[in-house]
Length: 225
Image (cartoon, rainbow, N blue to C red; front, top):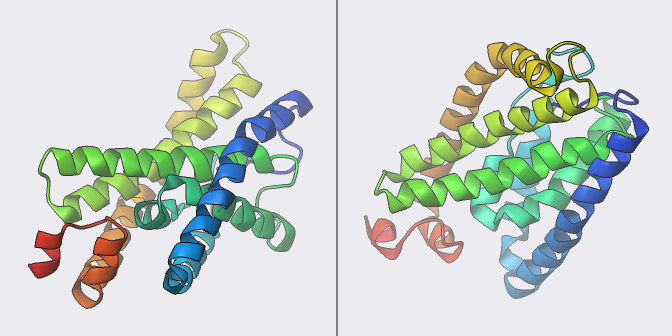
């Protein structure tokens, strides 16, 4: 993830920017509405943003033109919903591009789509599915956070394969190549991120369960437990 500056063809860079724009716009509306209704949640929102910034800044070399790292979006997505993470992720990626030379401005739309849109929406969908299957809270959080990380990189593999199809095997062969290289570093990183997110949620559940209930992350019965 964090496709580097100038790596994507212009039409792909523009296309991913256009695809990301509606999610970012709606996310800004969602955050503004939530902060207006629950001003006390501003600090927790800032913590979620900082968590994403720090984790996604820890990069390892990977596919040419990209890198591997945790994403940190699962935490904020489960707390505030996936829409909120689109503008948060955009700001995180923008600062990283400007301050850390991590990613780029021309690839900002593509990186936002994979890390701040696909990842958060996957996290919330998988968390709800796991809870509907009566899996424990900790297991549900782990699945959500780790798979959000992995699916971010699946999306990046799609983006790179679409931009640079294999001369013989086309998109499919290129996708398998990119995804295979990413998997070497990303699977252990995703597992680590899932475990870290579980630890954070367990701490929140222990010390501030009422706020998690207000955010619809845990039920009233789990608050009492």
